[in-house]
Length: 367
Ligand code: KG4
Ligand code: ZN
Image (cartoon, rainbow, N blue to C red; front, side, top):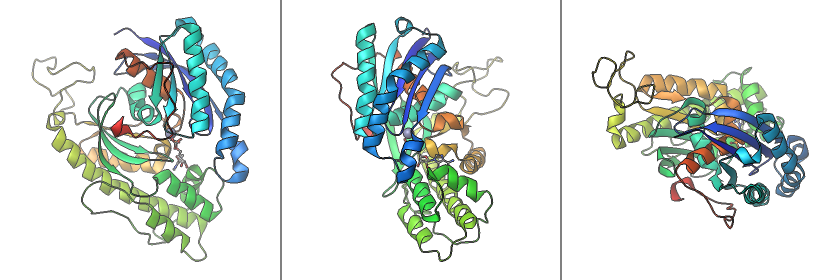
């Protein structure tokens, strides 16, 4: 398949973003531009994202950000193969702004439109950055989600586990608030944890050892709230250590499920060049590095946390999975991931009509 050039637009939360990506499935692809305007300053006084403020800020910025992304990439609308935008899930006012802008551009330039699921954009990012191969095991950890899924192809998701209460990013954000750390909470907690003692407070490890691969974080949040005279760095470190222990246990459980569903991925079906089977010596599978386990992908804003990344590295090398981690700036919300999802869906002919509606809720495994 020839390379596609796609403009992506992301407005589902508090970043107004546009990017141009060029490439072909399974990746990696090339990021020609990746413009992000963060509305952090507008929301900081409220300690969280205010939907009305976000929607207005998207409206004010979107045209300029799209122009900048095209200019930086040196690409004209006429050069595009498709226009992609996040169509959900997210704050509906913001999603509407980005999707409407994409529709207008697609109509004006007579280009096909791709309505992207924000979660699928996170899920496929490791193909843009690392060329991750289907099927892979995905740990999706963001402000609104905490899921373990088998990603068997574009639009083909099988869920192994999800949170029964809070998302993990939410737990980071609430812990930061309890500690009086600045918004946004995740990066503040990570930074504070570097100076802290992770063994100072004995916090619960919810769901550890339970059957299945579901998560729960509300008990952890409650335990943090009950600490008397908390030492900020030690609480942050103890909280992060608890989250990491939970991930180790839950991801290991999902790895076992994935192996059962995909026994053949334990052999080197695909060499690093993506070609099937036989090595240069004509023998099946095993390259000079020996057997290659399946890919494990971590995605979403919380995946930019260095301590979590390190723990997952160790777990993967222990369990024979190949870890594929997008760089931190592609883990948090951005439009390059949306453009890439546009490349992948577009190359499969999965376009959307101009009548497509934004969706506040849009689960990955039921799309
Ligand atoms: O994917 P994302 O940018 O937006 C959503 O789609 O939700 O994720 C945002 C979440 C927030 O909860 C934020 O606090 C968390 O990711 N986050 C982090 C870090 N950076 C962002 N959590 C822990 N450590 C970080 N370094
Ligand atoms: Zn996100």
